[in-house]
Length: 185
Image 1 (cartoon, rainbow, N blue to C red):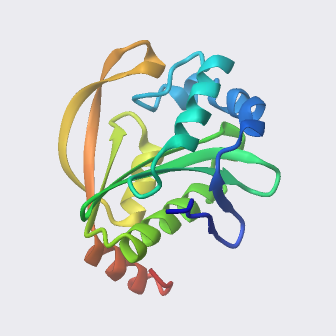
Image 2 (image 1 turned 90 degrees about the horizontal axis):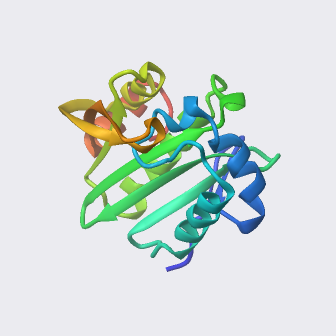
């Protein structure tokens, strides 16, 4: 399968490129970003950036897709989705300079729609650290509901164990929420 590039009014969700390395390292090398993620180390080095890009480019797009979120000026963050049978998982991050502009709302809605419509996903799962209210609000806005809590390590916090909320979004709830908001799912 070819890489599924997606577009919104303001964003292009595209394959991450080797030319994104400098910007990736600049934006991801932030404790405020990495500390809210389980797998991203802090500091985020150029070496790890190269690994991140290579892994993203070498994924089988039928199973895992890592999109660079591009606002026209270049990479501003990333969003990924994993697809297994009819189940999907997603996660994301955005550089601090781009917070509060609705970019991740736009990107996440587009990725969820892609999974539900093009990959026959019946439910998506996501997770958020308990102390990340901005991400929790975004997932709530998309219609995700809490299904459990666990404690997992955060590489961005040096391996510290952090309370982590697991959430799920059935397709029907995503479609119903989109209709209630007056926008296409």
